Amino acid sequence: QLQIDYYKDTCPDLESIVRQTVTEKYEQTFVTAPATLRLFFHDCFVQGCDASVILNLPNAEKDHPDDTSLAGDGFDTVIKAKAAVDKDSRCTNKVSCADILAIAARDVVVLTGGPYYPVELGRFDGKISTLASVQNNLPSENFNLDQLTTMFASHGLTLTDLVALSGAHTIGFAHCGRFSKRLYQFNSTHQTDPTLNSTYAQKLMASCPRDVDPRDSIDNDPTSPKIFDNAYYTNLQQGMGLFGSDQTLFTDSRSKAIVDAFAANNTAFFDAFAAAFTKLGRVGIKSRNEGEIRRDCTALNS
Ligand code: HEM
Ligand SMILES: [Ca+2]
Image 1 (cartoon, helix red, strand yellow):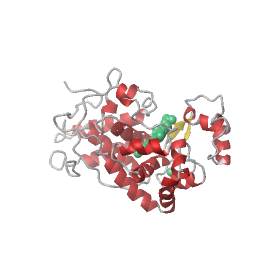
Image 2 (image 1 turned 90 degrees about the vertical axis):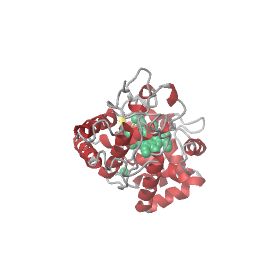
Image 3 (image 1 turned 30 degrees about the vertical axis):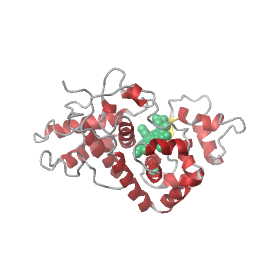
Image 4 (image 1 turned 60 degrees about the vertical axis):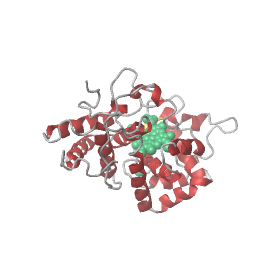
């Protein structure tokens, strides 16, 4: 029931207002892009795409360890865009924070060189956000393909969607503590994960030595960290996936052909990403009765 032209009459300039705010913030700080894209994913997988991750309540979603590494610039992007939207008197208190996040997430994909695609709108903001609801609902960086496909399938997302959406790791950052196990204590026979390219492994060890502050971070995509492109897939072909959950998309024979197709054809990746993003944006949509149009994206109306 989402529609591309949902706000056509109520807030006709919505898309350009959001785009302008996101562009200004992106020009100030690059992290705006990966932070906003990841925020959208984490929102949709927990309670659906309803901006529940943004609510600032005691023991809220954002306080769960899986969400505490969400960069503040993603939240800030939505708050700033909401303020800009509400300044247009036609739009005041009419556009949901969940929809603003969805538009902003598409906009950062475009800003970093990725595909443009229309975003479906008409979401309502959720009224519930709990720390407990995050548990086991976001994928771990150590997941194998079965674990990844089970979790994605539970939201109607296919194997192709999983591989395409994982391509978001073509931009952004990761903290050393997230993959140090792959470098230093993989398992009883291999200190370092044998699927990891050895030159890349050495580079990672140099950037993230054993005693590194686990809060230090490095680029997800070692070849084009700020560009939304299919380098993520050519990296996987060379054993240069940062997380186990990335590399397994290539090492597992069931998804390898999809990785190869996206590595060979950037347009194929862009088309699949746009389609998968649209499906992700439909997860757990709340009706008018189940949700609200939040006045302040960080707080419940009342
Ligand atoms: C397939 C399962 C996935 C796993 C296991 C996973 C895991 C992770 C982890 C561990 C990080 C690093 C966090 C940190 O150290 O701060 C990360 C970063 C990121 N993830 Fe994912 N992710 C997955 C899928 C996705 C999807 C579907 C998207 C969006 C469509 C996404 C977008 C991002 C972005 C943009 C970053 C960089 C964030 C930043 O620089 O602030 N990820 N992911
Ligand atoms: Ca890239």
